[in-house]
Amino acid sequence: MSDQITDEQMRERILKLLLPNGSLERRQVVAFTMFYRKLFGRKGDDHSAERLQNVLNQLVAEGVIAQYPDIGVAEPPYIACTTGETEQ
Image (tube, rainbow, N blue to C red; front, top):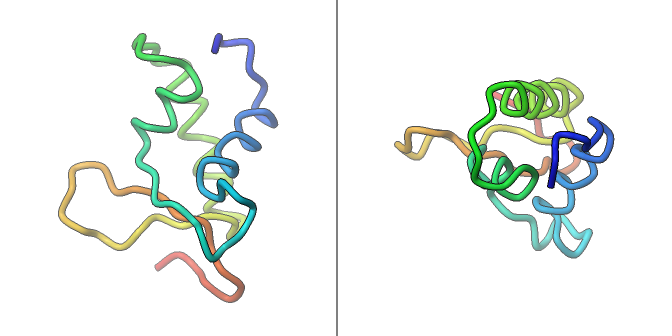
């Protein structure tokens, strides 16, 4: 996909990756790199990476997603929040 993706489209795609069936029961854990590759492909682009990080940060701030608890990986992944769950 190209840089022409809007922030709103990015947001929708992020949520579809985290909730592939629209159900919290089957939510996925996804790292930043996977979001980036699904949205922009393998080409490195600092502007696209910054836009993606801003959208992820906004979703975290809204309580829609959270960073997964530290599991010792270099890049903490994200997960969709269940009702009442908040970022620590």
